[in-house]
Amino acid sequence: MLQRIRDRSTSWGAKIIIGAVIATMALFGVDSLVGLLSSDGEDVATVNGQSITRQQVELQVQRAIRSGQVPPEQERQLRGQVLDQLISTSLLDQYAEGGGLHLSESQLDSMIVSLPEFQDQNGRFSRELFKNRLASAGYTPLAFRAQLRDDMQRQQLQQGLSASEFMLDDEQQQLAALQNQTRSYRYQQLDASALDQMPEVTEADLDTYYQEHRGSYQRPEQVKLAYLVLDRRDLANEVEVDEADLRARYAERASDAERRVSHIMVTFGDQRSREEAVARLEQVRERLAAGESFAALAAEVSDDSSTSDSGGDLGVISRGFFGEAFEEAAFSLDEGQVSDIVETDNGLHLLEVTEIEMPSFEALRDELRDQAALSGVDDIFNQRAQQLIDESFAADDLASIAEDVGVELETSGWVSASGAEGVLAEPGVMDAAFSDDVLEEGFNSEVIELDEDRRLVLRVSEHRPATTLALDDVRERVSEAVRQQKVRDALVALAESRVAALRDGSVEAIDWQGVEAASRQSGGEAPAAANALAFRLPHPEGDSPVYGQTATRNGVVLVALDAVQTGDAAAASESRAAQLVERLRAQSAVSGLLEQLRNDAEIERL
Image (cartoon, rainbow, N blue to C red):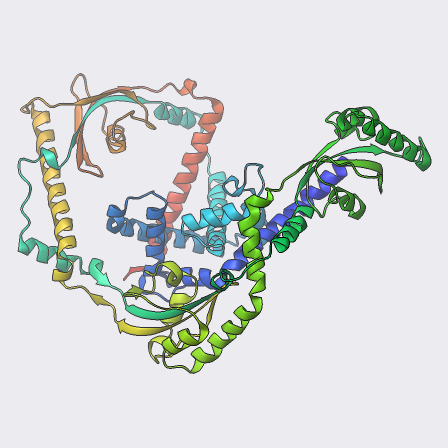
């Protein structure tokens, strides 16, 4: 019996969870995805006629900053890298689409519910975790779903390309030896403090830099908005809720709460009659009444061998899996209670509820109060929502509507289509603000349904077009950019002079930091850029080090490569070598494909 129950719960449970995912996505609305990924914004590049918009670039930049991958001060430098990445992914997506690669909706659903990032401590999909973690990363569920589809199709493409490549055994051994190679080197970091004097920034420098980077100092089209928000929760806060209503709601929720159930099953048919099975369970009930434990009797009496050794424990159950009679009995019991005899297709049962997964009434009081209050204002909310629709259609302002509907008139500062915050950043709001009817004709927007509890209407109070900001308006930003560039150039020049002096032996003593036997993956406390450079430099000849320099996030680093230790190909396990080969084959195949696609594509940076 238990195995069949588990089989049912596996298949139907997955469908229910996937349904919850889809329902969660639906709550955010299709407009959220369209608003994020539409191509209506200003184009910054085209790939074979397909647009890449400034909005797409900004979205990826902000996600990288929000997730902590890139510090905010590197935002400007990041944009070029993001655009290059979007061009590459556009090429791969076009190639995959042309090749007929496809991912079904059910595959996406199953993948989403199986991701550990969205599972609770019990390994079950959590809608709350799903929404919160996507929101913190700057995704709506629908945008995440679209991104996941693209990523998985690219993975299919990469796997297909790597599977078509091969490598000879001696090439694999050579690759393993290179991978296990270690290097010993010294390094010195140079930052602004290494300069004898800070570079001077002149007015001519500012003007030259500004003219060369005018595109970085664009002010987007902006508006100031007046808006009203009708919120069901604000109405609910004014409602008095009866204590008896709260208790009734708690009892109703408790009747459906998940619970841990144990059972003692007695079958009938070949070995015993139904009457004998009933008699056997009646004896069990008498022994329970006399004080014997349910778990001990399950081990002794139950015919369900898969649970008898664990005291008859069926685990935590939910409604919808066990049949009407079984669930009616299980969900009518309080914790510690034992049911009457229950008959199912598999036999007769006694059920015991050992635990109910339900917070206390006091822990849920505020939530129950909110639910009761919200349900109590349905009529008035619907009436005021309709009043908001009717009056905003014809009114020439929002102030009179605010008074009639009983909500506060709110205003914003200057805001762009992609720079809104708070309620104005919710799906559909800025689309409405920049629509022709609202922006050009001066009408109130249609009433926007933010969610089931909130409605919003807005109008534009001021508008200013996109423009390039004057140098005086961005002088501080330009000055800082020029200063950083001049410091970087000065450090590069200093590093080059020191490397030249090291090579001819004329340099004074340098305070080096030493690294012994660094691997390609780790140089200990050395900067990643220093370790990468050490593995790019040629082998030293004899006792003479090889010198080099490279830029880092905060300056320049000098490297003196002293020795190269040959890697042992035999030291790498067969599985690690195979994984390395597979990864490098995939990288090589994708890089080669991208190079070909770039050469054949029509790519225009605007």
